[in-house]
Image (cartoon, rainbow, N blue to C red; front, top):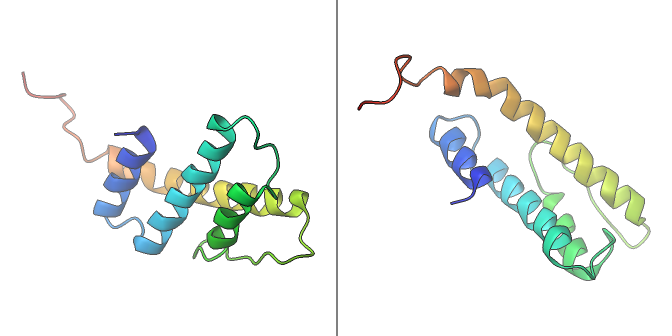
Length: 108
């Protein structure tokens, strides 16, 4: 299981966010993977990326909309802003989640 999936599962299990934010995180990962694994994708207005960015706009942290007049730079800005706000939210809950572990370490 990927690191982002593990962290998302843990954070949701502890009530850090609900299913709508989980979907936003999964969409962010999908968009990231499009750029990382498909060399022909180099723009946020590429159809394979844009369809996920349009859906990402439905997130509860930073809702936005994309229309025919939206430029690639604007879509990129929405993506980065959503990522920053989600990252900030995860950083805020990180101390509470990591503090739940056993201070003496795992059992032998």
